[in-house]
Length: 300
Image (cartoon, rainbow, N blue to C red; front, side, top):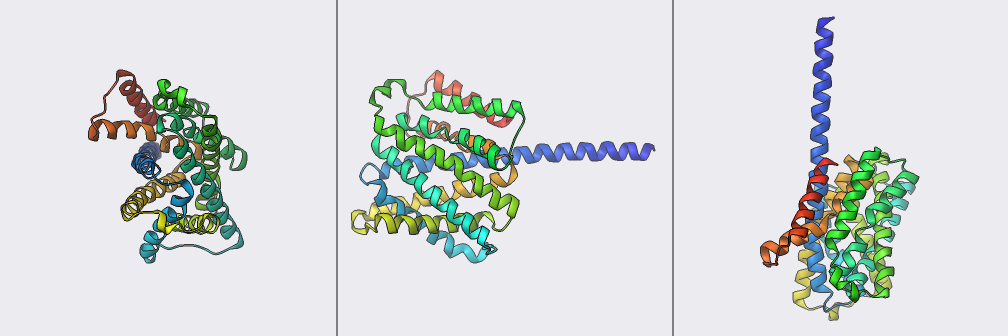
């Protein structure tokens, strides 16, 4: 009897340690996705100073799909069924619209005005995850996620710039948030519940289909883009690939809403990168809020 008590205690402790390690790895992966997203956002704003959304969208995803296709013999896994094909097409279509509205938002306004609205995606993920996947967490986790979302919005808001807000910004920004929030639901279902595709294959197929949809709808404006801009598009594509591979992998490990919440603390890293590389001025409010968001991200 004593042996079984000791054995039970050992197994129980082991499971707790493994759960803790799982939580840490899940958090780090989702936060790393936010880091790569912050670099991609900076590069996107650089591109959209001189280009229109429809000029960038198709080329952007074609570049990423081609990059992954070259490496696909190392990772390709896709079980072809009517359901898997339909879900991949649905994910690609939702994300094409989301990316169009995302680019449109930055085309119409400054990042300091647009980012708070774009940070609402996790709220939609929690809602649709609960409705369609029964993907729920404890009340405490919901509260923590809500606090993080609110803090990110406060952090990324430049209240002096709110006078520059245009009504034309509201529709594309909220549309992008809604669609990015919804997109995580079929992605998690396909990766976790059905297990018909792995993470890099899903992103490669998604990128290829988005490129196809965008080029059919908006055309192939090859002459509008300079050689330098093509280089930026390729470089940005590498960061976006990293961002979404990490996001998809995090979706396989944890709750969809929590994953998208952590992946949307992007403004924190934009702030840190600007402070380090652009020598932008640090303020106590920004530093304190950033530290609080990072601490809550670890706790959640």
